[in-house]
Amino acid sequence: MPFLFVLYIVANLDRSNVGLAGLRMSRELGFSDTVFGLGGGIFFIGYFLLEIPGTVLVEVWSARKWIARIMLTWGFVASATGTIHTAHQFYWLRFLLGVAEAGFFPGLIVYLSHWYRPEDRGKAVAMFMAAIPAAQMLGGPLAAMLLRAHWWGYDGWRWLLLLEGLPAILLGVATLFYLTDRPEQARWLPREEREWLAGELARERSARVHSSPWKALRNPHVLLLAVILLLGLAPNYGLSLWLPQMVQRLSVFGVSKVSLIAAIPYLCALPLLLITGWHSDRTGERKWHTAIPRLISGAALTGCFFSTEHVWLMVFLLSLATVGFYCAHPGFWPLPNLFLGRSAAAASIGLINSFGNLGGFLGPYAIGWLSARTGDFRASMLVLALCAYGSGLLVSRVRLARATPGKLPAVS
Image (cartoon, rainbow, N blue to C red; front, top):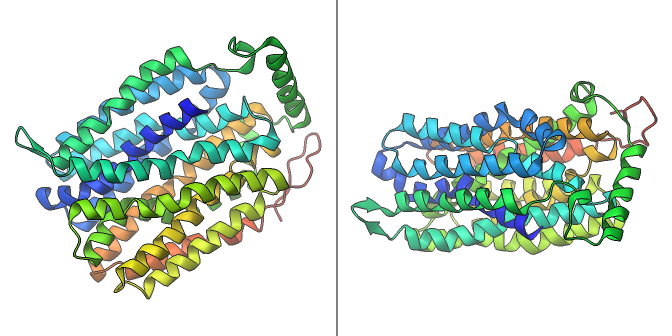
């Protein structure tokens, strides 16, 4: 888990550092809000295309080899983003970064199911996904330092993108030698523990519905979860990309101070994410641990519509919204494994994350498009709030009936 945590920190630094780089990149390259929003979101179009096959490969081939491949390619592309000069170069490299990283997150969710029992997966997902706010907390101070640099004639935003791609390359090589695919291969565990864990996981698999991956992809229950995630991730990723520029435009703060302020919402989210994962496992409840945080995010974003003239009130509300975004994940991601067999669960997780991450395109692009036409972020806050409300309310439609052989749970 500590190694996966570090991998996901690096992934999120490389995925979201463009938001901090944009504090200077947009001005130097003459990018409009629409261009920046489209470039930020187009990452998820590339991500969408290879998500399902990448996730299935983790299940049927090797998590270690596939994750190493992902990290090596995305590291090179992430660093290359620091060399762009035109909007089209920005679009292409962000698209290729999504292609390179496709399958990483859902693949690791599947990988966690190889190591953690159902009653422990909420905590496992929370510990793993704590890397997202941790990355943003680390990225703010790091960006504040690098954005002040001007080495060999290159501005700091270029160094921010160039240097933050290098750890992915190094960790990709380390992954080949460090990760173990399954408990049965873990020579670092005592034999009795390996056998006990393998037996527990085998019993769980035998109790699940064994459906084909293709049948699982047509299951209305899986499609509902995909829509829930799409609506939940649109405001999540929209805010992640645009938060630094929102704070900059609403205040008189300099780039360094804005970078540090942008880390505050994630500092708030980190401990509450872990607490939510622990509580979801302790109670065995998943649905409302997903719905309530989404509804809280919607309420906070609605409040932002009325608070654009008060920068610190906005920071508080954006922090509350961010807490809701991340606290929804520990309850959400164990759901597919509750009712699907091995390959079917892997394929469904890939589908859910693939379609869900289209929200990562829609959110950033909607903010850029609306702000370019209205001159501020008020309208986009309402759109993101509606997405968060929709995600939370749709979770109430999930029905996790006890599965019977040959029958998937119904959605009512």
